[in-house]
Image 1 (tube, one colour):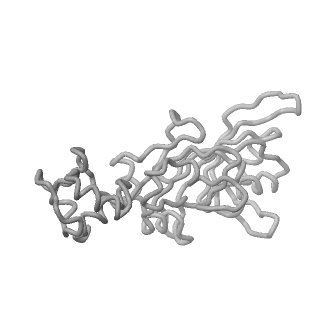
Image 2 (image 1 turned 180 degrees about the horizontal axis):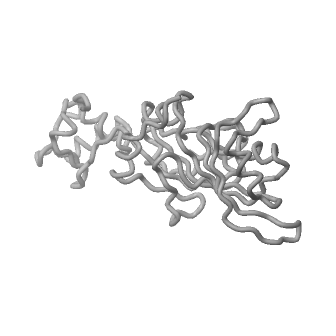
Image 3 (image 1 turned 90 degrees about the vertical axis):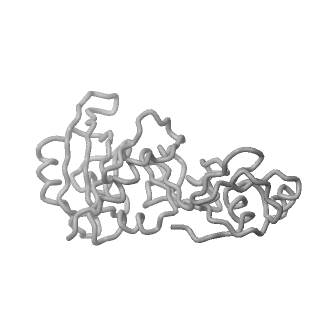
Length: 250
């Protein structure tokens, strides 16, 4: 439950202006509490039990935000960067007010599902090294991927730094001849998140990842109606599914 708060703080937190602008709006009679015009911008209120309106529009209080982004290529999974565009730069200003951050990272050239939130506890549950949350990727791989690679990934492969991956599930979607040779479309589910892990796993078996897209993380599935660079808020059902998901303990 949120604590009681000043009405000007509520309105500024919801992106309706600075404290001074809110104070001016109160003097102009633009703010009401339970239908009554507010005269004191410092009035202490309960943002859940009481109804606040600004210029006749009800202000819905919230202190957490959950966004599903279909990350495009060329954008980095960070809150700020001096050189590159970040996933936060893709958000509307009103969606940055609660300071969401990306849960985990996708490589600069990787696209697909990225969760952004300011819910630190949920982020910890999804990223904790003691948890093994499924992450599924779809990739186009240069080479003929088949049973040999499936067997290797099921057993775990040794990466270039000597680390042996946890068992992973590899599914071959299709194969086709391209100008560079035969290429395989695959889906790979991993339960850890080492640096460039999917690419390094295929490197370990002599194959090269050409394109990579994350399509799920735990129970959260990428909304295929989202174009790359677009995002939406999670539904209440999706949020509850994430909260209920605790991964697999070691």
